[in-house]
Image 1 (cartoon, one colour):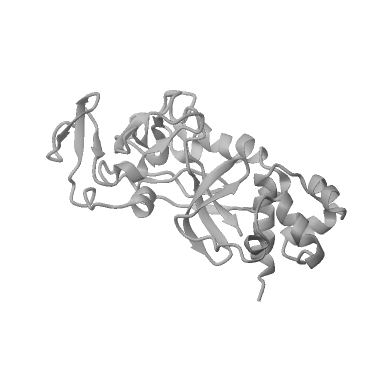
Image 2: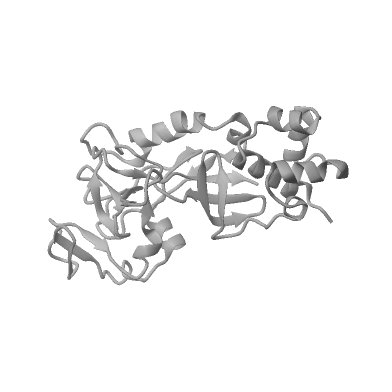
Length: 278
């Protein structure tokens, strides 16, 4: 049996991937834009007579339209202008993160001790960035109650719960979705003295340098920049070292920096995350 919702979602993804608006696709098919909208919302299915031309316009097969691959954890899907990795599915929704660093921004304009709740990056993601999505896409982004955990290495207090449409991952979520070697729980962290030099920390000294998790999951956490093939470090929403004007981050090589980076650094990468209605 055909699943109207899955078929509609597939048509939506393929239409956007091929650069058509609803009006443009409707014109080429000789139907109304309202008919396209009904397909994409799962209210109706395309007429059989339209399938050959529809598949040609969308550069795919009829089977791939009517029997789309189910969105599952680890899949890469298009949404808006970007590619997204599916971290988790839950019924008719999916937790996704941008597959690459999409831009570089400060966590907060002022060099100050600031949490996710009050930072400028949160305001930007939930206003300007969110507004750049087309209305049909904005309607698929779910509001999410964001709770967090204190920085488990330093004991730095997290922010109050927030309600966001778009947000950043926390330290806990990075470990959950990209792999957890258990080093944080065992307090096996590394500290750096200079660029690309890591030394095993005893958990009591060298706090002035800043600890990181440097393990076999580095490659999974590493992200390239959307504008090129080189890697970039990226912000997390968790607090860094003792509220000293820092937010946690993932390094160029995928190291999980528990100490974080200064919030006003302008070269911080942004990998937005959100819950998407399927």
